Length: 368
Image 1 (tube, rainbow, N blue to C red):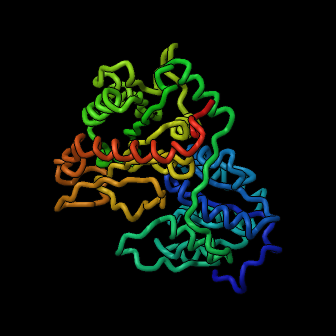
Image 2 (spheres, rainbow, N blue to C red; image 1 turned 180 degrees about the vertical axis):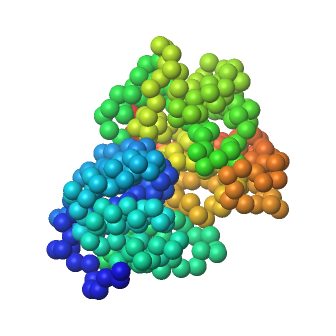
């Protein structure tokens, strides 16, 4: 099914971008999406993705429409029929799965561009060589390779996000419930949908939060999605300090959580301390310094090119293993990454941030 001839913008009226399945990967795809948007400026861009991922692009203008592609097979095939009614002239496949290529084909895409792997070459009109994957390299640059194969200029490494008015209003409600945050705060992101191996112990997060609140003149806000709500609440409880709070709790009880609220909170924070999970990738495009705690994952795969990022990873003989759960059962890479070492990095990042911020208007990153 190999197509002949280069992709010409005049022949692409609808472009379907099948987005990565993970929140962080979707952020890493934004430079490529921006480049596709620029080259195919007259095309209608439809982002096809799992429901949570669509919220990542909200407000960026990188897509004209977002089509939810649920994980369940029946719902996914129903979505493909919806796509068929607006048949794409070009489908760019960021996921490497056979499933994404099959759905694009069933949806009637005239040309399908994606990496030639996992036995799906016969479904692609424009296969792109994957290259050597034995050596870890940034996923962001792989996504850029797809855009360049579509005829785009080099997309660069600047990722892109937007915080919408509704997100700002949601965060304003957090500030209303916790006025202690108004004088500056450090955000903690303890989550990790990838698997338990990425988690830094909750007790370590609580210890870190207690130290920050006691010595750094800042409050601490534990971030969470719906599934991490108990972890964030436990961090606040163990820290046992009124300046350490969870975003998951409001004055009325459980707070409605969203990716938009997390984006607004990250943008407002003085610093983000995070596991290698989705919200970690919000820091760069929103201008917030970050300290990232790596365990089983290789730093190079998810390099964000954020100039104010600090990466911490404990050298261990067994890693980085790229496994969702520790195959040896000891989880040494995260268990033995001490709060002392992380706190030292936090102090250094806050000190550097204070120096930089002294030349800028106060509260420049904080939501009103």
